[in-house]
Amino acid sequence: MGQETEGENSSYPLDELLPVGCELKTKGYQTATIICDRIYVVEGSSDGANFPIDVKIFDKTAGKWFVPTVLGTKPIASRVHSAVFLSNDRILIIKGDSSADDCAWFLEVDTQFVRERKKLLGGEVVAWSKGVIGNKTKPVVISGPSGVGKGTLISRLMKDFPNTFGFSVSHTTRSPREKEIDGVHYHFAEREMMEKDIREGKFLESALVHGNLYGTSFEAVEAVTDAGKRCILDIDVQGARSVRCSSLEALFIFICPPSFEELEKRLRVRGTETEEQIQKRLRNAKEEIDQGRSPGLFDHILVNDNIDTCYETLKKLLALDDVADACSQPSSKGFTIPADHSVPKADQKILVHCGTAASGQACPNLLVFDISSLKGGAPGRTRGLSVWTNS
Ligand code: 5GP
Image (cartoon, rainbow, N blue to C red; front, side):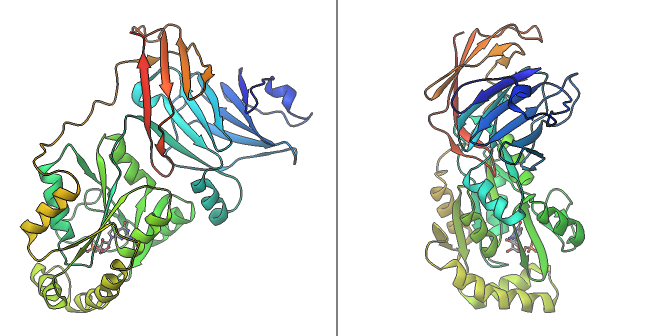
């Protein structure tokens, strides 16, 4: 049971594409998309069971099946889906029985991000990126030496604009401070476990900072985007450099102290570190400030000599001056992709002809997915998808 699509738009039953002895044992509904010498089989659920969509690759040249390393949050399988060949680097999966905020997923098979990760991890790699309707603004990376006031600036943004911003909760191997809550301020992790997750490609970036491991998981960034908010990452300069080199588009802001003496004073006043830790953080601050000022890394450098003035400048940079906190956009645009739909592609538009929604809900006869202005992609969401309906 399933559907086959190909770059050149011809279609054959999957069995006919496979040499004898290479048949696939399937759990449920499947689509097969041919890109060059590979067949990408995306497998759904036969009985509506709640498990992630599976991906398998058949290499026609080698005559073998591969189970790739799958990066990014995986979509939950639906009973039926459609696979649309977009280009040699990605396939659009449209899930049946799904609402607008869960219907479009991109399976990246040869994007810059996938190629980078292939080099790093070896073997076959694919990545999922959820399609987000509309154009959510880029994540904001905020860096600066310990004690410079990043935390205060971010807390103010989150307090004044709770519907606009969401904080990317990092993982760290350092011990929690008094009043720090696991899952809110950080995910406090065992070193071995975190190192394993990094090796398995679950992190956008990670770095050794002041003797502890810190890192941003893909899941942390995606959780914020899924809530319809702009993601703020509080990470050190090494992390900012890694994100800059990745395919995540972001705005990079570096916060500088007015002087080194002032930084030392602030670190002591906050009283959260031992003298030994303060000394270590001060030694690292010199290097961080030099790195932060290096050309091409940060888009903006702000000097925090007065927290109120610095906050006003930050708001201006983020185009927030005189702007009320926007209510987060409702993610569902009030339609559901029914299980029985057909999907032709016309230039940059995918036309979804709908049957009846299995849920019994009213659904339009035609949905048009416009993919002409896509932005972003794994790691993170694919933004800029437009959808029109005829109702
Ligand atoms: P703290 O221990 O004071 O919370 O953080 C120490 C440093 O680690 C800060 O400069 C902070 O920006 C940085 N940091 C926090 N989370 C991350 C992360 O996920 N990745 C990286 N690279 N640095 C982080």
